[in-house]
Image (tube, rainbow, N blue to C red):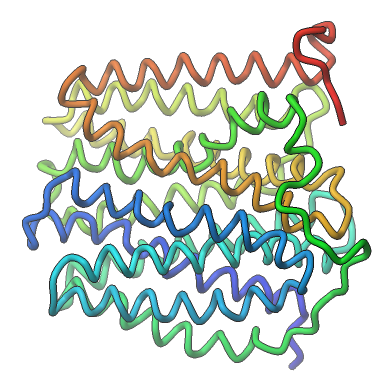
Length: 395
C-alpha cells in the first residue's frame, strides 16, 4: 500500500516532535531522582529554544532555496542524535542533557519550517488544510512523546534512558519512509529570503508577534507550571505530568476542525479568550495546590489551555502563510514558529518570579497580556475599530 506524500511528510514531523516533547514528564524524574533544581530543569527547556529558533530562522529560507526534503533529512538525523546524546545523560554528567536538548531543538526547528511549507504545497482543498495537517502532525508527536515517556519512566527501570531508546527505535522505523518523498519545486527566484515580506509589517508584529508566544506559553503552563505546583499531591508525578502534556496536545488536535469556521471574530480571539479561562483555573491551582481541589482545577485548566494552543497554532500559521509566495513559505512558517517557541520560556520565568512575587500575580499578568493581545488582534481585523494612522495596516 502506497503512503501518500503528505502523510509521509507528516510522519517525519510527528517523529521529531515525539522526541522533542518526550522530555516533558522526565523533568520530574530529573528533579526527584537526579536532584536537579527547578531552575536547572526548566533551563533545559530554554536550551532547547537556543537550538530551535536559529534552525527555524535559517532553515526556513534554506528550504525555499534548496527544497523541503533537503532540510527534512538532516532534521531526522539530528533528532536521532539528540535522543542518543540524552540517553548518554543516564551515565554521565548533565552536560549531555543540555547538549541533547540543544540538538533536539535543531531538529525540531528544521522540521517545523520545512515540513509546514511542504505540507501546504502538498495539500489540496481549503487554504487552511496545509496548516491543519502540519499542526495535527506536530501535535500528535507532542502528545504521544510525553504520554509514552511518562508511563515508561514511571513503571520501568532507568527513567532517564528507556524513553530515549524508544524514540530511537521509532525514528529508525519512520526515517526510511520519509527519506525519498518527492520534493515539490518552488516557484520564484530560487534565493530564499531570511525574512518573509510580511515580517516587515506592523500587522505581523502587533498580532502574531503578540499572540504567537501564547501557543506554547499556554501548553507549557499546563504541563510545566501547574503540574509543578501540584507535584506533592501526586503518587505518580511523572505519569501525571506526561498525561497533562498529552491531554493539552490532544485538545489542541480536537479543536482543529473548528479553526477558521467563525466569521464573527478572528480565530485568535477565541484562543486568547480560552487562555484567560485557563489562567483563572491556574490561579485556583495556586490557591489550592495542597488539596485535591487544586488537582481538579489543574485538569480543568488543561482543557482551555490545550484548545488555545491548537487554535493559535493553526490560525497563526495560516495567517503567516496567507500572502507568502512559494519561495517564501519556509521563511514565513519559520517566522511564526520562532515566535511560538518564545512561550517555552514562560515556565522558566515563572519558576524564578513565582516564589518571589507569587504565582497568582504571574497568572494575573498573563490575563492582562491576553486581554491586550485580543485588543490588538481586533484592532487590525478592521471590523471592530477604524484603521489607525499610528499602526497602518499593510499587506
